[in-house]
Image (tube, rainbow, N blue to C red; front, side, top):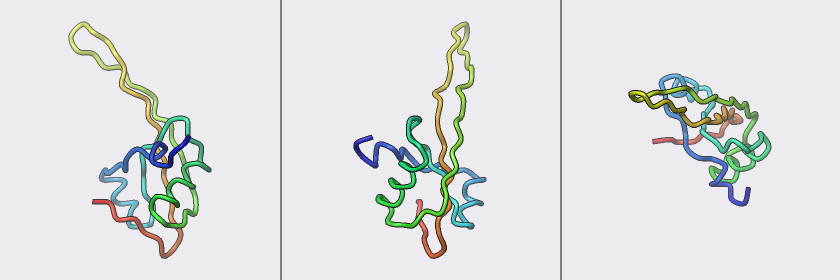
Length: 92
């Protein structure tokens, strides 16, 4: 990937991820082709923080239908990033 901003798409702000944020754990939606090393480097460069660990989750597409038409949602990859002590990211 050529640019760090192409790897990190957006933060995931849910009730569960907000609870994890108190423990220096932030959740991001990332490119499906990115690996843990690329995600770690991108977070450190974009936000100027130190990353302790990165866990990833591949979310499979779900079937949806509208009337007689059947389709699928997009697949996504979530990165759960644990920051080192003293590092923090403000998400508004």
